[in-house]
Image (cartoon, rainbow, N blue to C red):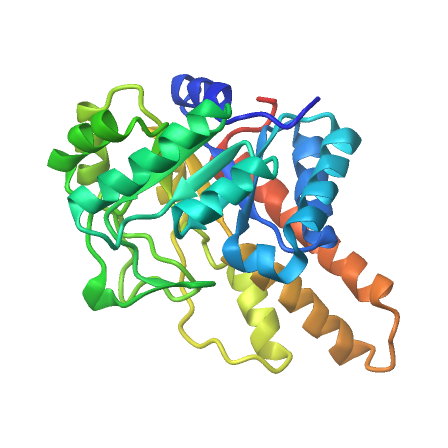
Length: 309
């Protein structure tokens, strides 16, 4: 199996009323945990890389590890740039073997977002790569993406047809109430399913993406707090809401914070219980196992893409 685009994945997901998990990767153990989970559940998979991850691990290292994961699992795996800030970054990833890129022009005026997205789409399509774009702005923090609650905005359904038609993008990230990071809601969590329904009506059959969709699993927040962390009030998107979205037009659900929480919680616990350990293979293997278990849970109980590879 080779690295694939998301085109066929999304077609099957839309028709089957499930979503594909897009999991952010930063190192070998995270990649292994995610791909071992997908292999165990026979699930299609998107491994996505942020600009920050490329700076941390270097593009070539991440690509070689992902290529190893494809060879090891024989699964359909797409490699996606998460929140590409500009044409140059997207071009670098396209030239470097990514099968999908996101150009995030959501902070720009509508016409500028269209122009930037169209430029990326034209280059990407010429190289057999698909493009995700974004309309609306999610609040929160993820690597270099920092948007205050005051600057966030829901997607306007009346804009989506023109945007998709003029840009030629292959999928669209929309803002319906999710947010980046571990602090997503004050009060009762809610998503604007009315916006999603209207977008689906205006773009029948078109794949929609949810960013900021970690559930901030309490088990790992409690673990972090127990062993020296300070995360009072961390609250994510309820998993039943994500499952509902996956049964509608949402074909791709992004998960990053839950990976970080699982990894960090287990490592904190290990050092609290075994402070004399200095072999990274011991605590990193525990973190990898935690990632695997968490991703399996997401695949089966949230995404519904098990046995869909």
